[in-house]
Length: 239
Image (tube, rainbow, N blue to C red; front, top):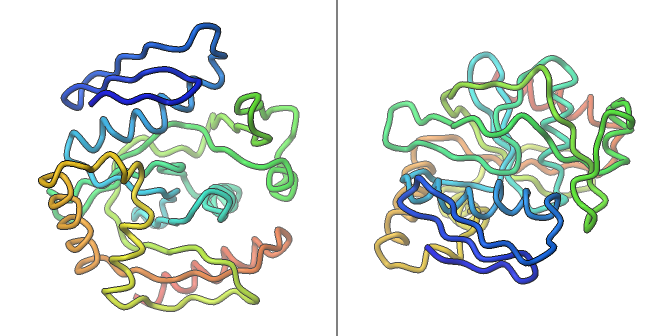
């Protein structure tokens, strides 16, 4: 697949094995890097047959727990809150799922996590160890030297993030869950070929039929993150 990112460069992704980049002249490497590890890597993973969702994922008792949401919904912040309590991070922002095996496996991503400065401060991170993601964003990058999981784990549960007046977890109907999975598919616009679309929809339907999917409403109050983590862990004990 050949694609173009305006102001960044052209990308050719071949057979799920190779990414060829023709960067714009003078492009900052800090701007280019997230594009390679983000959009280009997503297409490569899709070419390999993985279902790729916009999600961060942590490991709790040897099972993968995923948080899906749009940019700014708190995926990385919640994953980091679990990390601060000793849980491993499996993916950040890009979650690839192997639906061809039983149980479904979440593939580990890169050992770093992106946070806004206020989130990093609320979580107790030393601002001195964080580096800017790139000049066009205020997000910081925390490169993990521990607590990052480097092997696949079975997917147990998915939470769809939403803002609310209180912290509340509710199960989603299969129809709503399917819509949310499609909505939070990474680089969904690249699935233009009819066969790819059919495979993708089949993967989402299979996931809905086999993995519990919940809506997680939360107050966007950083001081309540420990309580939110506690609520999620209590919910996980219900099954």
